[in-house]
Image (cartoon, rainbow, N blue to C red; front, side, top):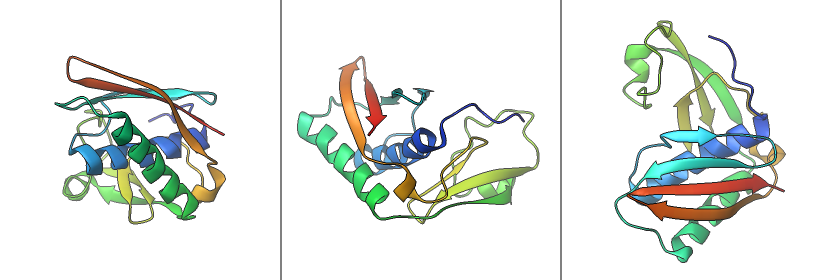
Length: 145
């Protein structure tokens, strides 16, 4: 597998955002994402349009994890074992038996090949710059400051 060309800060923030969305709305991780250094977007399927207060809660929750200075580590796991604690739905069919799991402390674990920071203190301030909701899909656009 080749490593994705993601900015480590933004990519780690995406992991935190995904877990925050799962916890807040009970949805899956983003089904579509475009991660860039300057700004990024993630799309989530959720049945009800979130309020502005919900969006602010998500932003605050992501920043709380970032400010907690959590270590970001990786481990290798057998695909079958990993499937018990991480979502493997985006894993390519030709993925090796041993896969890389990225951990944001005890907050998040995700199968991933991209680059990440070593500690969340390296990320900076997370800002949701806009959002929209249509046909059961929430799009969040965000940047780091």
